Picture (cartoon, helix red, strand yellow):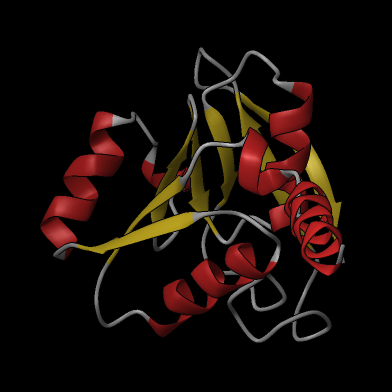
Length: 149
């Protein structure tokens, strides 16, 4: 009887894990080896329950990857990720990634241009000015997807 209870407990635990681990693809991150804030952002999305594969590349390869995704220089951050059919550029909060995945808008991706001090992976909330996460539409135009302060 104890063995059966144990097996039921294990089965129940496997069903109560974060839905993200089962329903979402891996976030594939491309970053330079020396960028500490990129590493901190990867940890931020992992702690939110996402599966992440991070790959260190040199700056030329990273820039070429951004170009292949047609990420305009004024929308660029310091690292680039791919999540399903979307790109995730820069220090996008995990909550915004969860939201785009839930809503699945017709778009190319999300970006937090530059490196706002209060964004995930930087100094953290309250460390700087507010910032916006932008939705990049199929035609390259943008709109505010979420505002953070």
